[in-house]
Amino acid sequence: MLSFYLVKHLRAGKRRFCLELEYALPEGGFLGVRGPSGSGKTTLIRCLAGLDRPEAGYLRVGEDTWYDSSMNVFIRPQKRRIGYVAQDYALFPNMTILGNILYANPDRDKAIRLLELTRLEAQAHQFPRELSGGQRQRTALARALAREPELLLLDEPLSALDEELREELGDEIRRIQRTTGITAVMVSHSKAEVSRLCSEVLELRAGLLDDARLTVY
Amino acid sequence: MELSPFLVSLRLGAWVTVLLLVLCFPLAWAFAHARAKWIVFIEALTSLPLVLAPTVLGFYLLIALSPTSPIGAFLQSTFGIRIAFSFVGIVIGGCVSGLPFMLTSLKTGILGVSQGLLEASYTLGKGRLETILRIVIPNMRTALFAGIVTTFAHAIGEFGIVLMVGGSIPDVTKTVSIAVYERVEALDFSGAHAYAITLVAVSYVAILALILMQRREAKR
Image (spheres, each protein chain N blue to C red):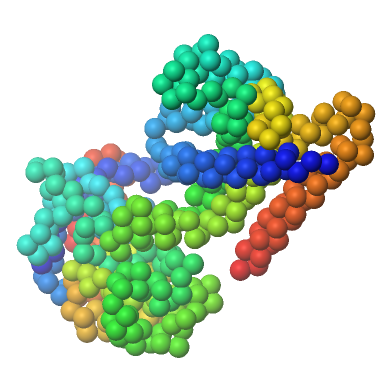
């Protein structure tokens, strides 16, 4: 079970608004968060990852509290069991695909299984610069899963891909999420994408004025 | 031509490079990532050796390290170390003079490793030290090499500070550049040439190696 209530003031260009969001997602659920650019999607996922600190609220994953402003609890990203796929994948250029996965978890057998799951066995000893966009995306996914995360966070994982590949890899993300049963949150600006892949969808709309609430529906 | 000035220069270059590498990394990291606004004042201070005359730096260092100064007196009375006109003195002088070369290269290299890579490493459970050792340093190796090469080449050719702080003591503080100066003063141009051309060759090879490495990295 993932439950959170997060408050954070944001600035998008000249606009200032307040992200205020409360939600609970059952274990194994796949939450899609959709909204236009500058609506707070990435901030939300960064707060869940611990890369940004909210101003108030709480974040609980299973029995663990990762953030609670009333108790001054903030667990650093290193200590959160998360798998995080960034928009640009952030693969380590000095490591092979296998090396990237082993960096997350030195268990070689697990790394081989993940390469099979993401259909990257043939690329195991290649470097990220030698891969296509789709292969890089699958590597980032395999690396994120290597830590056996409690929560998988995907920040616009398909935005850098062309239309055909988006559909194919979107299905693959859904397949892997179902296979592993990991609770997942994905943000995307595409309504069709989150509706097709996710079990639950949140739609964000940023207020134009300070303290305007985001609408959740 | 004596061999001793070359050995002193090489020892000086090696000490300055290693010391600056260790000292500058945390400083370069702070300059690249610290959010405090006052850090720019420290950064400006560390860049001063780029624009100040080496003799000015050498003069103030000599005053600061002389046995009559508080630092010099403390080091001499407590540890029996005399810094002015010693090898330790020219290493300190070389470090002050070479500081901006190492710092600039390291800061450029650190900034070249994207925040996204650091965050990816943190979300994979790695701490800052492991991230620096396994992600940052391997991905800034060209900048690291540039820092090492330029600092070393600058240190072995340093003249003003070395002469002010170290004088010209054979086998101790007399470097190749000082030997060139002395040979010219004695109107021994062929002797000066022998030292100078060696220094030119060493510096050229070092810079050439750096450019070749940069080209190879750019092709990747």
